[in-house]
Image (cartoon, rainbow, N blue to C red; front, side, top):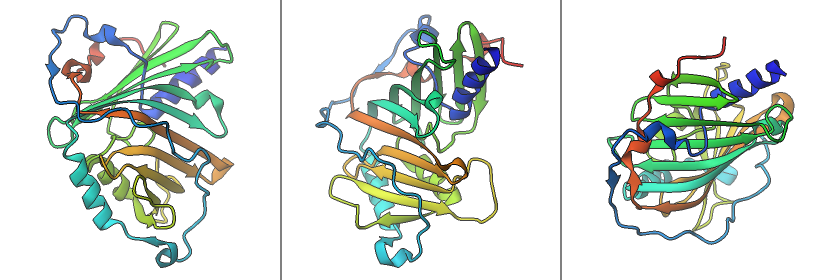
Length: 270
């Protein structure tokens, strides 16, 4: 039992995303809300593909794909107009239900890279439906601050931002992480006016931690933001995905949501 619980806590730690509505962190902080104009309503029901994109090497990149430099520039330009964003998220594994979760994502345009926050709820992590794990991951403009809790067993961590599965929701940091380890192609056959699809193959044959066998990215050209990210692992055939659902842009968001206090967690997992 304890091994299962510890394993579940480490799953969230490895995911670099966290809890669900842990507002108790900020009760003693006077809230400051950034007022922006609401320029977007919730879109119609999701049209994202439900089945993972097939894992297959690109034999002839020029046949069905094109290098997306101009597309990325347009996405970055569109993202500049996003002053804030709030959305629901879900994360799931094709092979491991223990990695499934749901929660929320918030973002504000603050500094060059912006700030974002993931809140996640995972249920049944130790095969017991009533047991829940929560956590919060905050990117404060420099580092990810992670807190999780399961039955009074807290865990905290500070780490560099990562691509998966708590990626930046858009902007220069997202593409910096993506292009650092992957050669990207735009899928011309799947692209439409409403969604853009990018496929990433490792740019080096050398095995590296956190570099997957293939990544598949779905983006919204109107906002420049991420809608879905899948990572494919040939070993075991696992596909891990995160979806950004029903995003709402340029709404008031409490800036204290992006302040974390790791010092309040003194107990970890040995």
